[in-house]
Amino acid sequence: MTATTPTSSENPRALFGIMLLICAILIFTTQDAITKHLAQNYPVPFFLMIRYWAFTMFAVAYAQKSTGSAKKAMHSKVPVLQIIRALILVVEMGVFAIALAWMKIADAHAIFAIYPVLTTALAVPMLGEKVGWRRWAAISVGFIGVLIVLRPGIAVFDPVAIIPLLGALGFAFYAILTRMVSHHDQFSTTFLYTALFGSVAATLVGPFFLANPTPADWGWIGVLCVTGITGHYLLIKALEYAPASTLQPFNYLMIVTAAIVGFLAFGEVPDQYTIIGAAVIAGSGLYVIWREQIRASIANRRAHAEIARPR
Image (cartoon, rainbow, N blue to C red):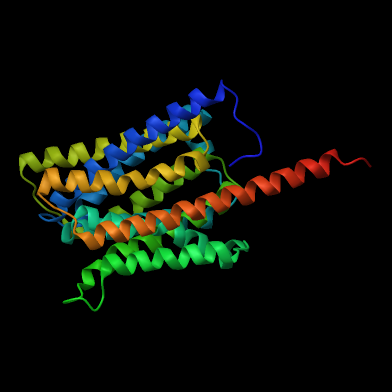
């Protein structure tokens, strides 16, 4: 919720941003199916390295276009934080690729969907944010949802299910650092650091896991690079047309699209525990997002009232 009602001219822009995000989500879940296929047949560091090379070329071109000079975009006020953030992301991508190789796509996404809740929890010690009892309750409910998906104590617990949870934790740290660097650097700088230092890290590890893909799989690696670039580009454009607070709830569509893509590509059918757990996680995450919007709206109204107060 916002303090002001969007004008009719703003609504079409927000709607177009949502449509772009949905297209990005469809591309990302298709990308996950390709990643799953490749991770089941080749070492993850190998094709992750190639994907980062393509990502870096796109990021350099984007920085060149947006700032007029990629070298200029490299000037960061918080370079150490930028590098740490980039390294966390490349590790998280590798971890999630491994999760996709061993798990159903829908199961992995159901557990990974806890990351907004983890981000809210980490914002307390890392950003000094205050979280009220309602959001703490939502965080607790979100973890209950994860337990439903993991179902420990029922039959034999599969330790592999912890992998996407680690990925979600890594992405939550990445999201927190993204907030931190956004106060100091422009987007093109952050984007370029993400690509360059992620590419350096992937290149340092990738050569130890070289593989010899079939011609068909080289094609899939090429498609993976294209989907990664296209998906990120659509995400960037979506954020230009609609605020992140408007777009964030639609990210939970990825759980649904992941289930559909997993079924179409691999014949995977999520069980009742995954469906129920994913619904609980999504519900808790949507509540957290809603409470954060309410909190931001109250803060904005107070700020406007303070400005308007007679001196």
